[in-house]
Length: 116
Image 1 (cartoon, rainbow, N blue to C red):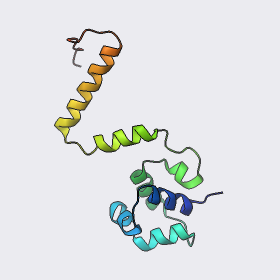
Image 2 (image 1 turned 90 degrees about the horizontal axis):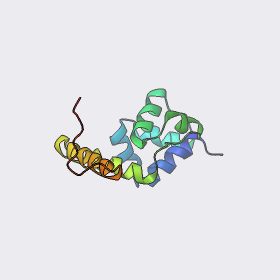
Image 3 (image 1 turned 30 degrees about the vertical axis):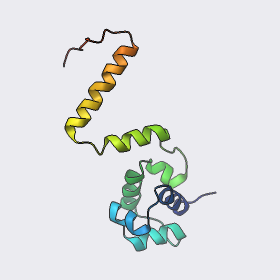
Image 4 (image 1 turned 90 degrees about the vertical axis):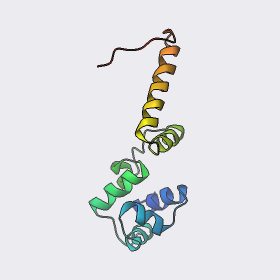
């Protein structure tokens, strides 16, 4: 059965990060990450939250191994790309997604929903 340190290590390896890169990205020290992964000690609540947010998993999953992120790998990839866009590009992506949805639902190409 995996423990929290093994889950952190697995997630870090999946992203091909060094402990230092993970530390820089989360604000958790490299020494602490090493200690978590080796099972020497358990992370603080603030470290669990920072790591869960970084890896896009729930704190429940990180702590217990249950209820991993409900996003598929494809959804995670899309979200990762989307979050790197500027606000104007995000709006264009959103508008295009709406266009595709309306097209799928059978609305005419020139359909424009009321703005609320």
